[in-house]
Image: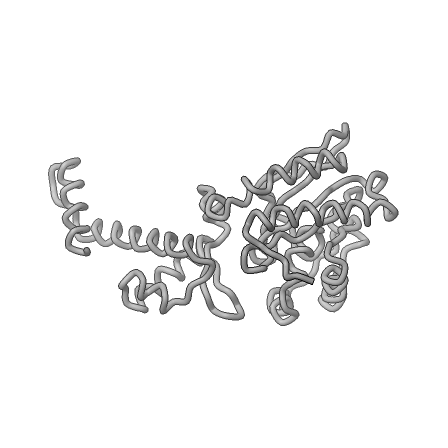
Length: 279
């Protein structure tokens, strides 16, 4: 396989330039091909270990590790702090849509998001987690004259947003503590939770009720209700939220909106292959 690859590169370069590629050029292309092969492997699986990747690519473990560290540094690969397993990183989505294309997340979520927006009359957002931040990857704007708008690709802290808390709540306490170890929780508004213990208590409430609420914790004048989206294995892979001013998302209205948001998130989860355990 390696011989055939070298021949193909050599023929291609000679046909374009009339000369053989330098050894350095071949090594650079080979590293690129191997890096792309790692991404292709991870696109076909939820998570893989270093040993599994090295075996599938028929590469030395040391070479595979170096490639993974480079991809990790660029955000194309992420590594679980608990298991050490590797998965696709959010950067794959940001530069080419590979992350969402593989999961078909945006495509599957859009009908449910449109229906939810029409139902509650407000803007609906779709977000995924990347480190300690949520990245907005989809939006359906509400019909209101004054509506809540978030730019696609925008990032926001997990600890003080509805989608962020929905993405965090079903992780283990140990993982949440590791994620925020030594991190100061910035008080964006007087309502922001600024201690890890307060955040953990809030996440327990989110798990118990099945949805998260942002009561102007990130931005004054903006409230959100969010629910988790799960994949085939039951893992939380995204969150959807309804955003509105406090006057349109009052405490009295939150439970009803939350019920509809959870129903929308459940519909998307089913599209991703999730099946809830029978009662």
